[in-house]
Length: 363
Image 1 (spheres, rainbow, N blue to C red):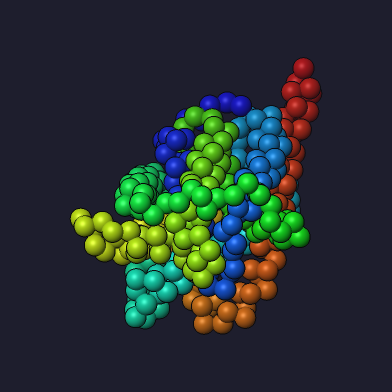
Image 2: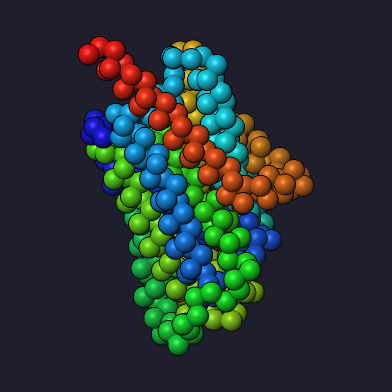
């Protein structure tokens, strides 16, 4: 695979994607029941192995295609096929963005900012999102990288403060407690990693090899989530099943004299992560529109419309959760994300096959 010459370092982009993935883990919606026993370690690790397994064919196909974006492989060759890939990708990106806004709103309103009207939250995050989109992807990734560093510092402070409360004896050898529920936990965990698609949809902006970015993202995010699960189990033990937001509770009970309101800082980190995640999905949509449809300069306007539509859809899901629940059930099965990875793999493979045939004709 050729080395890309974009203006964003692969390591920075991977760190931002990892923050995006951990956001999905920390900001679970109320009503989503997750068992954080020893089986949780198994579910997390297997979900990342499943992601890597599905990503390998996409990586190979992209390498054979010269490292271009999968959508670039089909654009300009067949308008119908290009439109199909662009439409499916756009719809999926819109849902991911809307769900991000919904998760961030519920997290903020259920924790440190429980008395703030939802309109204020969407105005705030909408302004942050529009500002990020106007500044461009490079500035957004840099801001996300700073938020990633802030999260790691926060995690280190919380860990240091809770050292006396960490009890490793609460861990036990059995890594599978309920075999009947393991598959569902793995697919649900897998479904939260939709940002893996950004490593190929936005590969033109990444400097270096896109495959290295994806590998770093997978290893970093898996390691962080496993460590967070370790803290949950060793600090809370059996009380963990009573908590909706275990990481927020960790920050609330950690006794740090310097930062008495560390739980408020925790919420601001995740709201910032949500804004960056929303912006990345917006950039991916804008790149998709520019690649698959003859929009020209209108792609920038479409990006702003996408951001507004994502926030409006988030608010709609907030007011009418019955509209979101069936979509959530389908997406938590992991089928939509798996289908998107396979779809992009097929696009890259088609581009690689076309290039191979073109070389054969020229020779």
